[in-house]
Length: 429
Image 1 (cartoon, rainbow, N blue to C red):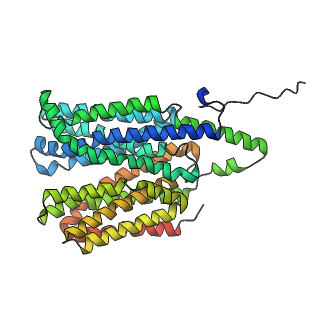
Image 2 (image 1 turned 180 degrees about the vertical axis):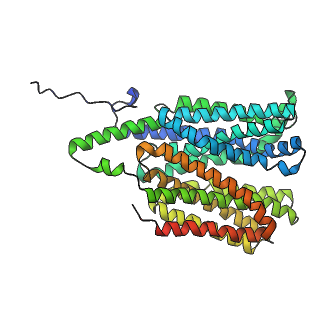
Image 3 (image 1 turned 90 degrees about the vertical axis):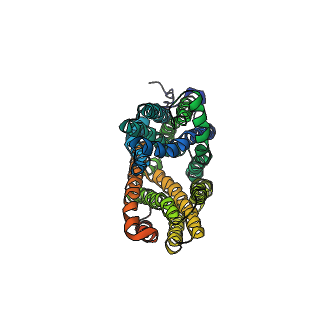
């Protein structure tokens, strides 16, 4: 019998371009992956920022009633929720690049449908187009998880948060493209208010191409190959670490999903009603725009700080820091509802609390899910997050009408308390 050692078996999903798999090679791919995802977030944000702003105006004009303007934001949220699971399943089956590219292309198609709706003055067609555009939001959400596929546990929060931070560029710059978009649309003979959707078509198409070309090797497939190779080495060495690491910790998964979803519901509920409250109390549109801009900056600009805190202090402490900021925000807007200064300060803290909770919760979710099930678990979390935002935004108007802006803030404190209690009583892994 021959004693020649068997050739090493190559784990599935590995790319010959980086063979053999080493920690250094994986780290190099992770750096490139992170850069591609950040660039994709910038492109997507540029398109989505203009679309969301003009969508509400177009909805009111085509429907003939300002009461239907909120349907644009609702359709985007619903589109993101509907796309979350299919894109997660596609990622699990084919990799991150095809899933992200598919979602981006769906958003580009949605922008074309919205332009057609403007030409035909069709409100149902407009809602369908905006619904498809919502898949771009699903791509943005899943991009943060793609950044964690190859990240080392010690830097997972940082890598994830850098992709979230990249959204700042598009979110802040996107609304400023409405004017140039209208001018471009007029030059091309497009219907009024449809020009800005051109930026969505171009930006989302470029993002799709970037994902397909830049995410090679695919981070999710490579992560599977890297884990398979590590397990093989551990089994040969007689270790049991691979078996332990593959076990899901369901209590931590539930805590992560709860913190992400309820923090999002808290943010959407108060943020959506703030322009209504401010204008009803005589604030100018300049003040309203300035307040929302500072809120958006709070959501994204400091996310790397919270990613580093999540890595160094831990996921749960950072979630609790986020809940503390959300509570402070709601006290500011509740007790200082009649003061523009307090409302502005409250909206800034509202964005900061959302950022800390979302970044740390996303890192905890990735830590706690079994590697082979992470895309599906992450997709379900995004579905719950979008649904919670939609429900929160819908109920916020009812609460505002019944209890006022201050009452809305105090009622929403219950969501913050629920997350804080869950973080305190959930058993640690």
